[in-house]
Image 1 (cartoon, rainbow, N blue to C red):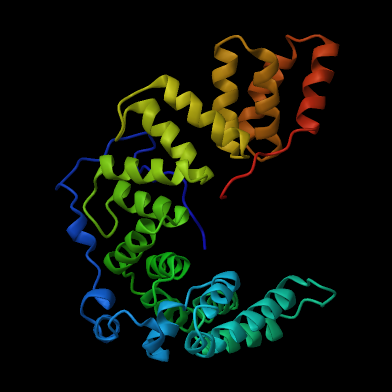
Image 2 (cartoon, rainbow, N blue to C red):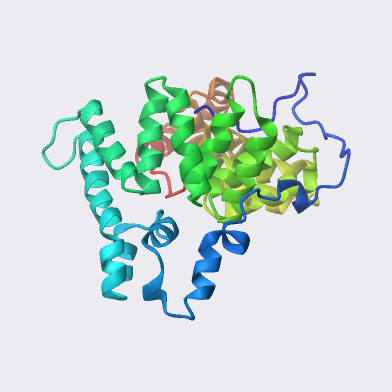
Length: 334
C-alpha cells in the first residue's frame, strides 16, 4: 500500500500550519471492543478461581491467536490442558512457515504464490492472526481486496497490531473511504507500539483525515514512531522541529533527526542534510549525502553536488565518490 511522507500542500508551499479546529481527545478513538471487560472471556477467567487450566479452549485460542511459535511453545508447557488447547495454533505455525517458504522461495522451495496462499489460509483457519495477516497481504496483492479486508478485520478484532494497522490502511483506500474506522484501528495498533501505525495515525492527525486536525498530537505520534526506528517518521520529526509545527522549533533537534533519517536511506533527508552541511562549510560531507540522494532519484541534489564538486580537488572528488560507493544504510523499521 502506498504511503505518504509529508501531507501534501495544495498551495505549493513547502510547509503550512494547519489550524487546530478542536482539541484532540483519546476518547475519539475509543475501541468498540470490550473483550477483556465485558466479554464471556473475562467472565470465564473470573469464574475459574485462578485455575487457568480450566480456561475453555475457545477463549484460550483467542488470547493466544497472535502468539509466535516460541510463545506458543512456552504457553503449552503451562499444563496439559493448555498443551492440548494450543495444538491448532502450533499447527498453524507450521503452515505459516511453509507459506513464507513458498512466498519467498526459501529452504530450497520454488516461489509459488498459490501454495503460499493455501498454506497461510490453513494457518488462518486454525486461528493464527499471523497467518491471517499474511494471507490478507497476498489477497491484497492479487486484487482480492474484499477477502483481504475480511481477514484483516478478523485479525484486528483478535488484537493483532499488524492486522489492526493494515485494516486501518485498507479502510483509507476502501471505496467508499472509511476514515473514522481507519483512525480507530490505527490508534489501537499505535497503542501497542506498532511504529507504522503510529506514523500513519500521525499523518491522519496532521491533515485532519478521519479525525480533527491536531498538530501537537501528530508530532507526538511522529516522534514515537521515529524513536521506534521508522525512517519516514524521523524525516517528518525533523521537519516539525525545523518549522516549529507541533513541536517547539529547534534547529539542533531538526538536524539530529534529519541526519538519522539520512543515515537510514531516506533520500529527501539525504538531500536536506547535504544542503545543511554545505551551508556550514562541510563540503566533503555534503557531497557524500548529495551523491547518495542523487543516486536515489533526487534530481535537484545533482545540481548542488556538481557545483560543489567543481570547488574540490581531483583527490577530494575521488575520496567522496569512494565514500558514497561504500556507504551502507543503518538498520531501521522502514
